[in-house]
Amino acid sequence: MKTLFLCLSILFISSYLFAQKSNHASDKPIPGAERLDVYLPILKGKKVAVFANQTSMVGNTHLVDTLKKSGVNIKVIFGPEHGFRGIADAGEKVGNYIDEDTGIPVVSLYGSKRKPSAEDLKDVDLMLFDIQDVGVRFYTYISSLQEYIESAVENNKPIIILDRPNPNGFYVDGPVLDMKFKSFVGMQPIPIVYGMTIGEYANMLVQEAWLNVETPNQISIRANEKTIKGVSFLDDTKIKNYSVRMQIITCDNYTHKSKYTLPIKPSPNLPEIQSIYWYPSTCFFEGTVLSEGRGTEKPFQIFGHPSLPKNLYAFTPVSKPGATNPKLKDKLCYGWNISGTPDQVLQKANNKIQLEYLINAYKAFPNKDSFFLLPKSGKPEESFFAKLAGNAELMEQLKEGKTETDIRKSWEPALSNFKKIRKKYLLYTDF
Image (tube, rainbow, N blue to C red; front, top):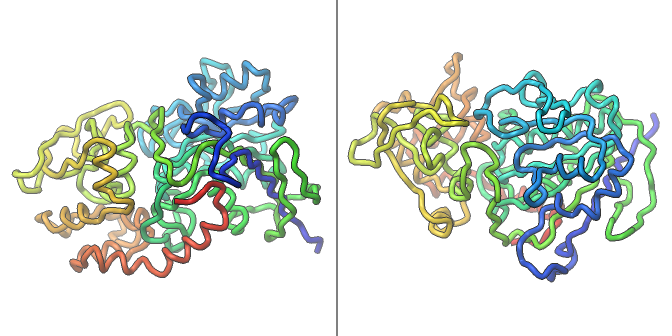
C-alpha cells in the first residue's frame, strides 16, 4: 500500500520563535489576524471558508468584513458554540442562516453537525480558522478546531490558522483527561489548563497523530523546505495514513509570560479577564447543583446555592442575554464571591487550579448525596462533572474528604508527561 505523508506547513512570523526581541516598538501582543501582509497574498484568487465568531477582529473591524474589503472571495462562514455573532447561550444549538451584514451563508458547527461537510466545502479552495480561545480543556473551541482540521484533511483542503494569544497561557495544571471520558468538552489527553495557543495546540494535534480522520487524504505534497518572506515550510513528516496542508500565522510580541487581556469577551459568560482567570477552577460547579454565577455580573467569580449557610455571600441569578435560564434562576443563593481586580485574582489563583472552593462547597453542602448532577442512568462516571474533570476519580476524592495536596498528587505522572510533550510544539518563548 502506498505510503502517505503529512505536509505540515507552519507559518512562523513571530520573532519570538528565535529571539525575545520584537521588531515592533510596542510590547502589546499582535494576533495573527492582524498580520494581513503575510496571509492576504495566500488568499488572493482563492474561494475561502472562514470559521469565526465575534472575537475574530482585525483591530476594530471583523475579520470577515476586513477580508471582503480586501477583495477576498468568502463562500461560507462557519460558527462555533454561541454562534457566529457570539450571543447564544452555552450549549444552545444554533441553526444555519444568511448573515445580514455580509449576505454570506453561515453554517453552524454547533447544531445538527460539528464538521463542515463535503457539500459545505464543494466551492471552497482554502479553509481559514480565527477564534479566540481561553486555554482551558473544556472550553469547546479547541474541539471545534480539531474537527475543522479533520474536515480539511478529509476534503483535501489546505487550512490556515490565525493564531491568537492565550489569556491562560502562562501555566499548565490539572488532571490529564482519561480518554474513557472523551467528549466535546475534552477530546484529548491534556490537562485542564494546557498552556498553548490554538496554533501550538493545532501543531500538537497533527504531529501527535491525534486527529480522527475517517478518509485518507490523497494530496500531492511539496517535499523541500524553503523560506520566503518569513514563511517557513517544514519537511514532510510521516503521520499515520493522512496528509495535512496547514499554515499557522503566529502572533507577534507574545510569549507564555504575557498577560493578555482580551479586547472582546470570548463568550457571554466570560465577560472580563477575572472570569477567564477563575474559569479553570470554578467551571467544576457546572457539574453540581450549585450556581456557577451565570445570570450574575460576575459569572465564574460567584457561586453558591440556597441551602448553603446564610452567613455566606448572598446573590440571585436572573435571566440575562447569554444566560436566559441560568441554574437557580430567581432563587436567593449563598456562597462565595472571589472577584477582584485582575491583579488580585491573579494573586489568588496563583498560576494553578484552586480546588479549595470546590472542597469547601462540598463540605458545607448539607445534602451531599445531591451535590453532583447525575445523568438519568445515575452513574457518576457518566456525569457532566466527570467529563469536566476528565476522570471519575475527582468526584470520589471529594466524597472521601481528600485534601487538595492529595488530589494534586494523583495528577502525576500524567501532568509532568504532558508538559514534556507540550514543549515540542511551542511556537513562542515559554514561561
